[in-house]
Length: 418
Image (cartoon, rainbow, N blue to C red; front, side, top):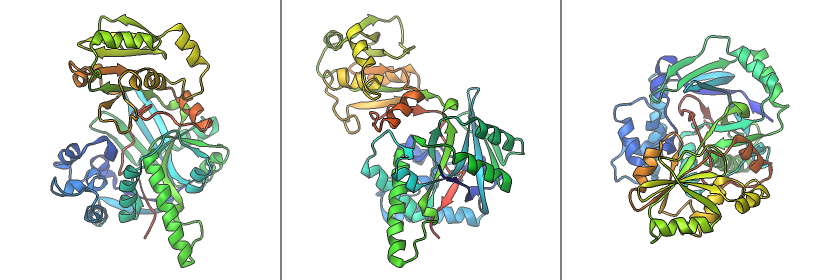
């Protein structure tokens, strides 16, 4: 793989904690507007520039993206950000609930996404891509790092650990209790060692950020055409690379991504239970909330109580023989219950279904289900399953994986145009 150092636009250390923001897509519009009210330096002001306008403003209008570009330039002009001319890597460490994961920040080649060296496992939606495409073109920058993983390389681990012996560039604990630590790696021998080691890594996998990746690739393709038409294309332009943080797979944990359906599709709770049994599940009443302890177990909450669903013998045998996608618990639930029983077809667009990431407790599932809905608590997809799906060239169902902690936006910015 080609993973390169880059000249980074980044906050000065004294403002890093104020700048760092959760990704743009974890907020709805009202939440984003509320969050930035008392946080003028938060990168969310730039990532979600509609927050600078009235609530009825078209959030995808050209003037909205133009305001994002103005804000970034203002933050550089007032010294909140610096444009570091060094071509450097950055080590980005996140510690949450006693668990630490350490990634390397660099830029990856668009060519390697196009040829499959960087593997994907989800579909993307054009409307979501368009927003980030317009954001990137307006700023001339990539601002949200792509979360990549690779199969652990012990020698690279040693090199990165040695680089962490120096003083950190940033260290702070954010509002969610995640300790963020960043080191700059600019010394020539260390940069060369990291670059060389990544050349021994055959591929990487998108863990989180499929839409950001697809958007960056489409921007690169458009800018290549513009440069080709002008006779200036070299292939070395910054837009040929996208901002990434790469983590070894053995440091990552995937949390459950749970489902809530707004109603029982006209069935009583007893009728629903009968249909679930017919679908191949063994159904047992539970004394309290069900948090599945292994694959093949799903919790179901409806009509005020919890049930434990487990794959029956025939269903378990069928799943064991299935391909890497069909054997996922989320796939089995979709194909056996959500679609045929509850009438949920395309989960990406059906308004009757919502999703709850694993950091939110079962209380949130119960609240959303209410008295008429149905909530499902899932066992988390494993990192090995994610890699197997991507290696097979297959696609996971939407909302199959939830990674924590989330990478913060605003700490690293990659300029792709002057």
